[in-house]
Length: 305
Image 1 (cartoon, rainbow, N blue to C red):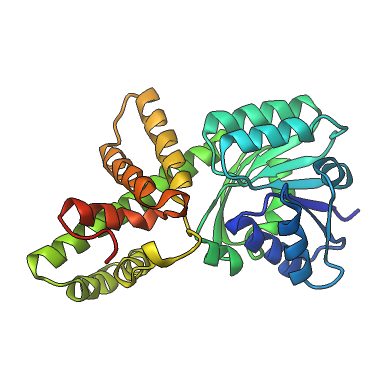
Image 2 (image 1 turned 90 degrees about the vertical axis):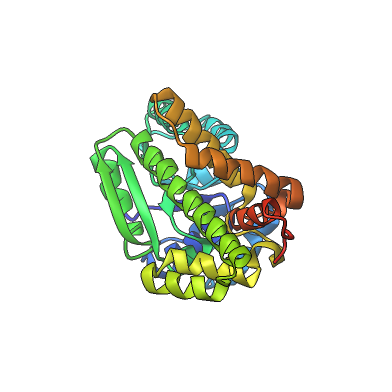
């Protein structure tokens, strides 16, 4: 029997992932969409091909009708609250697939809660920006029981993502552990670019000359972020691509994991200090790329370039 899918949580990433599930997932039944802000769900449903999705009026409705329930929420508190409510009904034999970026302890706790109600959980955090979510170019990290992971894979590589990292039969928290550590690479990349561009400006090298080196030596994310810094995207956009609040949440998780493991992440400590400056300057509109503005201020330049 074909599986009925539900999607819960419609942030920047979730909308793109839903779009690709509907357009490329070969679904036999309409995707059930639920979001606490109903207008977001209704707006997305209106943009998707007719008859390919439907909006649930409640979390309970979405979960009860689905065989596989995808969740993608902003932080640990939100996913804990959602799963606690979701498993109050009969969820036996369902599969919950969580794409949220949370602490691995949270992921393992959710898995225990879900399994205690006779369901299974697959952790599936993803790497990539919202534009990559829209284009189905995410990197999906899957962990959990192999039988459940196998049922989720058809919706990952070739649909929502370009590739999978398979942690089948490993604890679900291994996936979010990789996600947190992986996100520190992004954080440190932005910190390095911000310091480099600030020094290039102050020393007289010039940002264009530095960018030419970056795009030749480090094509890909480094070049893309370098362009965002130079163009002022980090302070001009109305909605952040990687919000400062979420970036600081990830940094906090990374520092917590490092302390618990007896190691240090001093680069993350520095970057998190700059993110705190971004919060003070821009509030929740701040983006991770705003680190550039914070570094500029330390050098006696204006936050906005």
